[in-house]
Image (cartoon, rainbow, N blue to C red; front, side):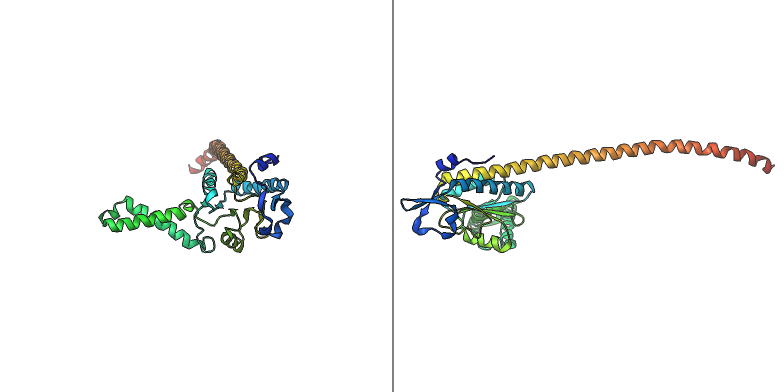
Amino acid sequence: MSRTNFDTLLQAGCHFGHMKRKWNPAMSQYIYTERNGIHIIDLHKTAAKIDEAAEALKQIAKSGKKVLFVATKKQTKEIIAEKASSVNMPYVIERWPGGMLTNFPTIRKAVKKMANIDKLMQDGTYSNLSKRELLQITRQRAKLEKNLGSIADLTRLPSALFVVDVLKEQIAVREANRLGIPVFGIVDTNSNPNNIDFVIPANDDAKDSVEVILNACCQAINEGLEERKVEKADEKAADAQAEADADEAKAKRGARKPRKAAEAPAEEAPKAKEDTPAAE
């Protein structure tokens, strides 16, 4: 069953591409027609690509891996933050920090620095500082929080990137390509889809368009997380049952041993009687 239907995508304005003079020829396979100088995207292909991407995202979430959402455009920041947070995934909505993937250890150091500032503030280490010094540290902490707060829980490289507007976020896409990290992207008619592993051809400027696509993808991620929980619960139950069976088998083996011990003296008893006359 399709996660999004044609009418929903049409109503959200997913079909509106860019002006014809700004198009990227590599997107020709996803363009349905042109109207008033604007390219119209084939929504049947968009729906199929959303389903394909959603299924792949579901499997990533089911395996316990992370998907990093990236969208620094003003109109999509809030949507990305809301949807990514709802499925407990990291996201970047401010400036993309160059080298975030290719120089990941340095980014982790900055995140740890933020956590260290919090720790020192709580234990009273900064209580003797002047107001000026304390203000500088507070500002530094706020800057780190703004740029890196949403990826504080990302302790290792993400298993995939979900990008809104691959043209604007081309640095993030290049870093992911370099490391072999799969890229899911909402690709408009002015962008190059060749470097994107899972292309979702759609309007990447309209808030409603991005929201409809994110709803479908995040729903799939949530399904993957729920299935992972069920599998873990089943594994835990199976382990508990196996442990109980092992304890029961051990108890049965322990119950058999006393009977063997009781039989042993009965066999030795006649020998003891035979030995008695010899001793006399």
